[in-house]
Image (cartoon, rainbow, N blue to C red):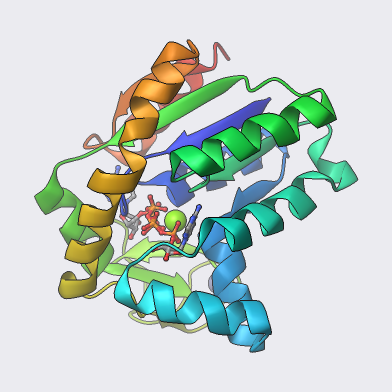
Length: 214
Ligand code: AP5
Ligand code: MG
Ligand code: ZN
């Protein structure tokens, strides 16, 4: 299965990707996670990405397309993948098409998870992530048993630098302007499924699976 997860910031792409990884054992490729890893390592890529991410802007297309091209060429992507948060511009979508054509891969489905602006902001601001294993929580919707401590591995949880309400508003307007046109792009390609992301996490996952016919 070659799945593309779309949707505004905070919609639940990462949460649903984690469910798909558990069930189908295919790699989860999140450009946001890749950039955050580069920032942590202090690489040149990380420095470039950090300035954009902190303001809620997109990292330039050439940089982003380059890292995705490299990642998709790895052999673990042959049996399937979940792309999360890429593409986010029409230029990225065109580049993805040519990368997949070269690899002779056809996308199975483009799943767009939606939620209202107020829900998206509440989700992002309350999100907590484990420093050690990356598990995602929410202070209200999926809290850890002990505050600040990951249920899965005991690691410390933290808040993402771009999860303030102010930066989140910028990210949402960037989404409206640059990423929303992709809905039409994938509708025309007859690959598009929209899912109501305002439901409970388990219900959203049921709908994800329905859209994949599994
Ligand atoms: P990225 O990391 O991709 O962030 P995003 O798209 O803004 O999406 P999020 O990760 O914030 O949300 P999500 O949909 O994964 O939600 P989650 O499942 O965690 O990108 C960050 C930055 O990197 C960008 O701003 C940009 O600068 C750069 N970047 C990345 N990709 C790029 C690209 N292609 N081109 C250029 N730049 C790029 O859920 C959120 C919270 O809600 C969690 O706390 C979760 O527990 C909770 N939750 C989830 N589902 C539910 C539910 N159904 N009910 C209640 N709570 C829920
Ligand atoms: Mg995410
Ligand atoms: Zn953990």
